Length: 47
Image 1 (cartoon, helix red, strand yellow):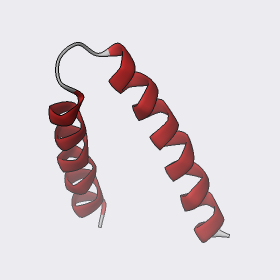
Image 2 (cartoon, one colour):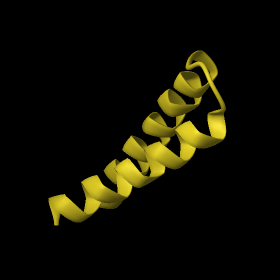
Image 3 (cartoon, one colour):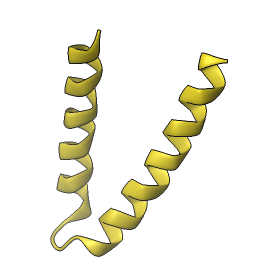
């Protein structure tokens, strides 16, 4: 059950991030790297 919820949230989040990257100014590569680092920090802190 947790596995499905995780995949669901992952898909929703990736969709939102994709929309944000289209809307945000600047190079999307740097936004992607920043969001990736932020996601890793959030996962390590929650454990």
